[in-house]
Image (cartoon, rainbow, N blue to C red; front, side, top):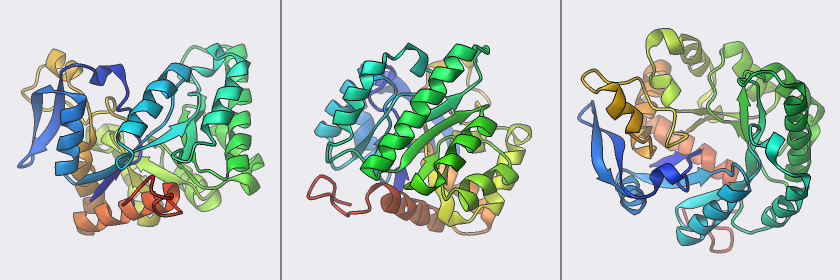
Amino acid sequence: MYVDSHVHLSHRLYDGQFPCLTREQGEWRRLPEETREGLVEALREAGVTLCLEPGIDLASLDRLMALAERWPDFLLPAVGIHPTRAPGTPWRAWHVLEALSQEKAVAAIGELGLDYHLPRREQHRLRQKLWFCWQLSLAHRRELPLVLHIRQADGDAIRILRRYRGKLHGGVCHCFQGDAALARIYTRELGLHLGIGGALLQTPERCAALEAAVRETPLSFLLLETDGPYVKPARPEGMGSKAWQKTRNSGLILPAVAERIAELKGVPPQTVAEATAANARRLFCPEGDRDGVLSL
């Protein structure tokens, strides 16, 4: 059993037909003509029982909520404004988030946070911080966990999260790629989980610090994720760069992520799969089946 704690199934890269990454008998390969519906069926067959999809902007929230209504037993929605979309999002959008956050199916607020990888623009970073703080307050009012997107901005993000420490209701640092010291702050100090996905399957020189963080972090703080259709493993030998660029990521890589975590921690892969799935259920489904909305 696997839970994908961060995926974007409503993304337009999953529209129509697309090649999708999978692994068979220890080898990566492409499913050449997959569809969104076919992918969901393949995920179920592979043991993925639940996915959580965070919002990105107002347009993505419409698509996301429609898919969550279509697959209420499989797709949980989170609602939020991504930090890179914050500068272009009008303030009146808070009315939309307020309303959507009250929907029974909504499991978290996000993805929210700070992203400084783009060229430095002070006014953009200010807007990111303002939206970040407002969404932290919204999550507190709704008593919902967070889906955090923090990229090259850990210093500012941690300072803000520390100010809200008494108002946090759990959450996950999605696509965590920091070192062991940073992992300790997010987990042991702030009580957050770490989302681990394709970044752990990169080349050794790229993921050495992340490997050390995973090795040290207790399994109770780890979640599996994909960030599909993005954040794939290292490109396999024999697959051209153009073909690799067109290949979509999905929860079909989760067994490989669980196996790598298991290797680092010296436990069976099944232990990782079960523990991370249980972590996700406690975080995003604390009330069980949510009055029939979700059945696990």
